[in-house]
Image 1: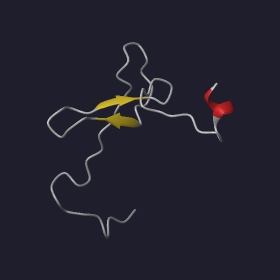
Image 2: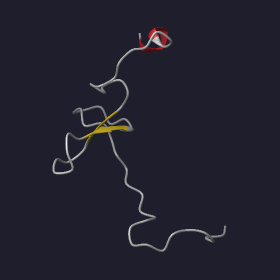
Image 3: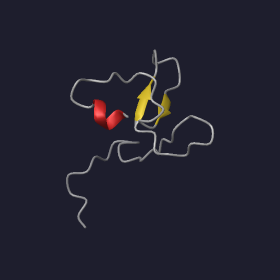
Length: 63
């Protein structure tokens, strides 16, 4: 595997794993939110994400 084209900037290739912040969940937290850069980001799985809005096209999937 070649690394040609990868960044050499410090921290550019760091992988950070985020898990759902709901106690006992343990799922991948792919949905993060922070009200400002001064506040640490909280991460949720889709099931627990509090900022989601159902749209007309996905009502069946959310139930």
